Length: 250
Image 1 (cartoon, rainbow, N blue to C red):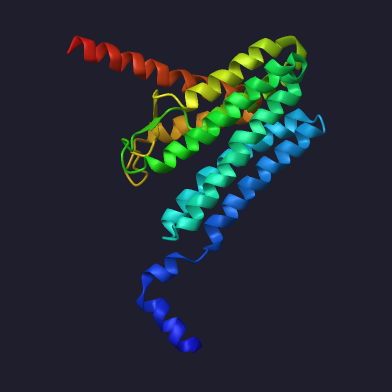
Image 2: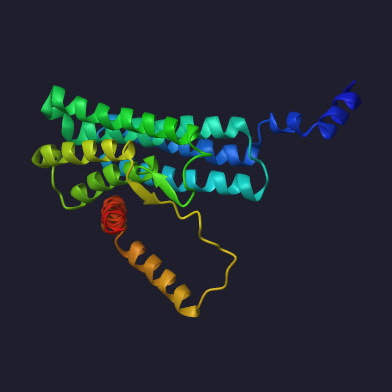
């Protein structure tokens, strides 16, 4: 009987796709753990490790899909598991970190701002999963949830590095939180980077630029990383305005 089942698995590829592949889901589980770790650290009032954990989750989330494509181990289970992991790491964790750090003192307005971000992440992930075959692959519809989480966590990280307490910037923190939540569910286009061909040859100066970028990032990550994601968050609005005026000109 075991031999007959193995033959069926070899003959019918659909049965193989229903299985759970270990390698990409290990990265997804690691990203989920990083998000859970950020929540625990925020509850313990350790906000810098919490913010760093969200960035770690973002890196791991970017790896699981690429590993699945490189090893031909994509599955429906992996896609659903990745979405649930993203909701914890980039939806619940950033909202809770920001709430515990700065928004708690605002009372009901604080948890409302945190909830707007959280529900924005949930709607963003649901829309992304249902529009995979519709939207332009070169652009995201709305800011992706990892970038929004990095914007929120980066704000906490850089403020703590500057020794600015959350109570001092609580209203601006609520603005950042609501801005990130609403931008996720907007129709603002954001470059996805999926049209980059890593197999194409590039000039040597490009390699030098990449190395220089890593050196700058390693020298002051708590300032460079948040700045990069602030620029990315604003880039979508710049692209939207440029397209708007281009259409009016035509």
